[in-house]
Image (cartoon, rainbow, N blue to C red; front, side, top):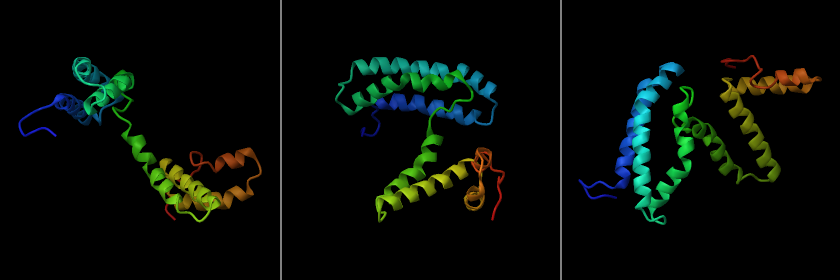
Length: 175
């Protein structure tokens, strides 16, 4: 932690990152093509400054220090970080994916307290069905009711595939 009024190496990087996120916030409603144009015009120069800062800072930071480890991580992830500049369709971060898997992480912790391995597996399978239904815009109860009704009667691959959440015609149906 820096004393009040003092800035450290990380403060400049954070300022660059805040600028990038501000740009993303401003363009979130724009088309992919418009996002790409803004990213190339506004975000790329900031990314270039961040890279210059990184190259200068990494050379003067002990690799074992907290800042050294953070700089090395940023350096190693750099090609992935800048990929979002290549398309208006790419997000700046993977927060959406992180948020999508968070329920599974919570579930995984809960499954540790299942009475048996079979029970934990069953819970995990059911949880996967529910989260996949949500990810496909389905109301989970309606989807489970549908597959538990339809799947036992399915005799062909086509009938089974109709039960998959991305093929199921239950969008926004509440039961």
